[in-house]
Image 1: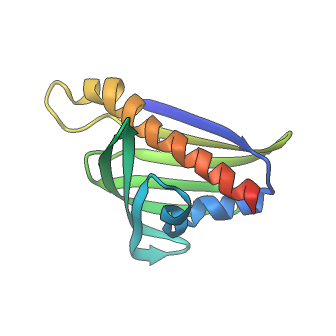
Image 2: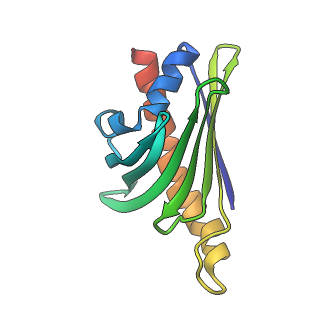
Length: 151
């Protein structure tokens, strides 16, 4: 399963990168994030626990995961390797590139699916990826865009 979410943000790339990498601040600027906390820190990244909600009308379905986060400021890439939660073994890469009219921000999620016999990959491709992962990532990008352009 691969999901790709992309947005162009009209702000300096350093500002966009700072807002994207400052994950502990996300619950303050992104209404769908319930909490983000570092369990361990290293070189601007570390082991980070995140919880968000995927809205469905009046309902907000919870999502939770723990990732190893690495931050490459020179390449302007933020990577996550999910190590706990239903999305364990998922790889995520945020890439920021200067582009005409702003900064092109792309999030790529790659995952074989949960370790459920027979239905894991199918559940990932048909439900978890397009409904939950895309639903949360697209809202995250919209909020990062709003915050970076507002600053």
